[in-house]
Structures are given as C-alpha cells and as structure tokens.
Length: 428
Image (cartoon, rainbow, N blue to C red):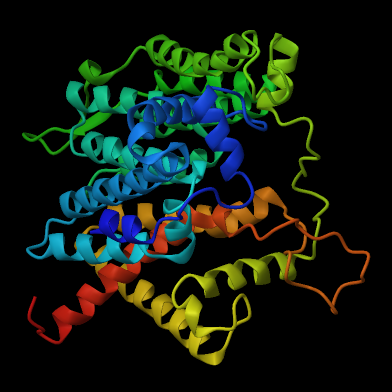
C-alpha cells in the first residue's frame, strides 16, 4: 500500500539539494560529499545498473528510496504484529505503519533520491533482529544478537543516522516479556553502538571504550529462571565469545574502505579524494564541516525545541497551512495525532510493554535526542524578528533528521486509532 502511494507521487526526476549528487555518485560509483555513504552508493550503483534502461538513472534512484521505505513499513508491521500477541494486532500494525509511512518527512524521503530512506530500512531490520532475539535466550537468540551487532556496525558505511535507532533496538532485544533486563546484551550491543559512533567520528577513545564495554559483556553471566525451583541458575551455553562479535564489527567497518579503493580509480565524482588513510579519516569524520559539539548551544534551547515543534506540525496536514506557516486547523490536526499517540502508547503498554517502551525510546531519541545531539543553528524559517539579524541560521530546513522520531510517532498514533476502535466496539 505504501509503495503504491510512493510510486503515484514520486518526483519526476532530479530534485533539490543532495539528490543530483547522489544520482551521479550511484551512476558512476563515485564518492559524494562526506561522510561518503559508501554502502548506500554501492547499493544505488547496483540498482541503477538494474533499472536505468527502463526508468533512467534519476527515477531508478527514486524507486530505490520508495522501495526501501515501503520495506521498512513491512518490516515494522511484522515486528508490531509479532510482538503484540493480541487478536487484532495485525490491524494495529497496519494502521501504525500507514500513519508512519505517510508522515510528511518520511513521505518526502521516499519519493526522491535520499539516503535517509535506506537508513530507515536499516533501523527497521535491526528492530526485526531484536524481536527475533528477544524471545529466545538460548543459542538461536544469540545468533540474532550477533546479527544485530553486525548491523549496528554497518551504520557508519550506510549513514550514521541509523545509530539513532539503536537504543530502541537494545530496549527490545535485552528485555524479557516479564520486564527483566539482560545486562549482558545491554553491554554487548551498547559497546558496539559506542564503537560504531567512534568509527563514524574517527574517535580512537570512543572506539576503545566501545571495545572495553563489549569485552565486559562476556563476564556478566546470563541467568534464567529454573522451572523446578523458581530460582535463577547460570546458563553458560548462551554465553558468546566477544572476540567473534568484535571480528564481525570489524568486518562491517571495513565497508568504509570502499571509499579508499574507489577513490584511487579517480571516479568522475570524488569528493574529498579519500585515496589515503588520512584523507579517508577526514571524509568519514566530516572534518571539512564545522561539526558542532553539545556546548555551547548554537541557538537558544527554546528555539531548538520550537524548531522541532515546527517540523512536527508539518507531518500530519501540511496542506492545511500556508506552506511552511501554520494555521489553527493544522495545529489541531497535529495535536490530534499527539493524542492518538498517547492513547496508542498506553494501549500498547497494556498489550506488550516491551515493544511500547522500545517505540517510546525511538520516539525520544529521534526527536529530543537528535535535537540535543546535532545542536542545530536556528531554523531556516524560524527566529527571524526575534533573534538579532546577525544570528546564523541553517541553510535549509532539517526535518529529515527527525524521521525516525516521526516514524515512531506514526506507529503509536495508528495503534491509538485501533485502541479507540476497540473501546467503541467498532467493526474491523
């Protein structure tokens, strides 16, 4: 359903900003602007080879975005239906992913050439791995944990934004249905998350901390309830070798070497020319940009939160406003979806607390967490007349940074619609 909607509304060709560069990079297997996104470009190159003659290069890459977003919806619906073991869980999953997939920012990414569609699918697949691992704490579950760790380590080669969803993956994979936490899994996946962030920022100390945390995870003995005595007993059979996990992570990080190897062939598009290890580090860490730290804030905190609220206002009924400027009707529509999400979160916590908490973690990390971490300047259309004219603003609107948060919001709002239908005894 989502794919049909995206195909009916996809851009006719090259759109603004990064789309043309990504299309050119995929066509010639080149290197776009830092951080280079080598796995996205490699996937795009294969996709263009498969569909260029039929659709042309630009439309082929847009089809990749549409397909990845639709697959993210399918994967998320599978997780929702699998985790919530209620009679009508499938309808809640369907309503959730339809709301999530038609959020304005998600929809826009799905209908143009943009890396965030592939990043969204990456997170959805990680959540699927976590769901498979969560219900099996023996050897099979640990294989899914290793798969999740490998997927987390692939994030720097896809796009670092995928790491925003990893806390939700941990919250789902490391918790039993009765609410107990598996500390060993928290440490293992948390260590890979820290190390992956270090690789993405080319920070040796972050990588070292991640490796240490991963090694510590193997010293925490997993425990299971003894069916006979109701006590806890050690289950050494489900321990993992942390060096195997680190080897898998290293294999995933090696995908960044695509940039080094390809740049030495001097492709037509070769941003940053990462043909040496030093230049590769500069590209991966985006050192050509002035990457802001957490402090000092580049804009007042209230304005950064207001900017997030502005982007949230665009998600539900964009046509009910005057372009980027809101109207009372559009505000009411957004507030209605906020209310639906609150109803959905409460209903899901009753049906499956583990999944509800994971989605809430994704919502918080994808909204307030992203706003805090990125420390953006004042929005392109916000703060004028309030801040001094000399205040720096973002070059364009950055709503796409918050896509994972809006995705979680849509999932909860759709489930809230199901909860309201349940209360009123409405037909399916």
